Amino acid sequence: MTAKLNERGRITLPQNGLESNRQQCQGVGAIAVGSKAIQSLIAGISLFFNSGAIMPAQEGTDPYPLAIGNYWIYQGHVVEPVRFLASGQRLPPETRNKTWRSEITRVAYRRDGMEAGGPVSFSIAAAVFDNFPLATFPLVERGGIPGILISVSSRKFYKILDAPSGFPNILVRVQDPHDKLSDLLRDLTPILDLPLSMGKRWGIPFSTWSVTKREKNPLTGVRGVSATSNAEGFVLETADNTGTVRFTFVPNIGITHVFSKSLFPPGDPNHWESEARLIEVHLNRSKEAVVRKNNNRR
Image 1: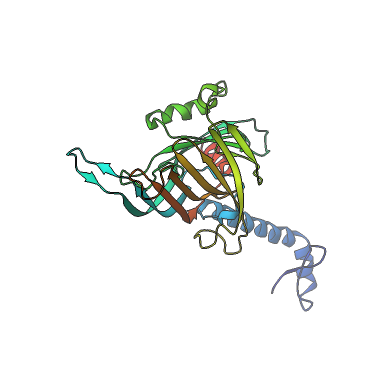
Image 2: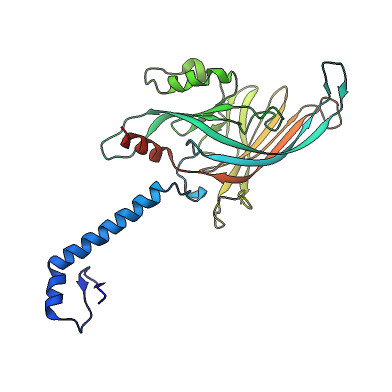
């Protein structure tokens, strides 16, 4: 015998059922069936979130998803300039093709207050990347360049590539609510200043970023992203006395394309350039999910 929900939300039985069965379903039986349905729903939700299933990347809510285990796989090339070995041997310019992975290995958060039962918010987050996507030469054989990305109010994002040995101390400082981090961020220009729009510029002379283009369908062919995704990307560019860096940023996904080159033209012995495109992305969960899970373990 199959029970159904009518328009009022009551459980009903087929018309040929006994009157006593109807009364039971409208009474204690209805409560029992309803309880089982709720228990099944809760169990299903719990199983989904505890299974570690990867949500479609475009459904993320963080402008730059900073969670441990998130990773991006890039494919590209690097043109290395003329090099000299210790023996004095001259190595000509060389182009190398590489596929490499950029993963978040550690994350620290500073909480910006949290009401009981309310949403979790953060004033500052810092994520350590084993291979930072905006490093000048991320494709060299030495295994890439680690870096930290610091998010301030999910609006301004700063990169730090110097002295990886100091990264643990930076993470400790980020979690200290009394540390204003002024000496750490004062002289840095954020690589992102959200929200982005065409023509937007920020920074100081010789350290300025600008939005030069909007890019449609930047996720075409990227594995780990829904085929129906219609995300839009923004192309950002900066230049100094060493060269030019240009990258595409897609909100809720991350960096999808990086291109950098020296001021020396192609063919010059000192010319170098590198380019990488995102081919796969895995975003496990948001910051909020990670914090709630950690709180439940306490």
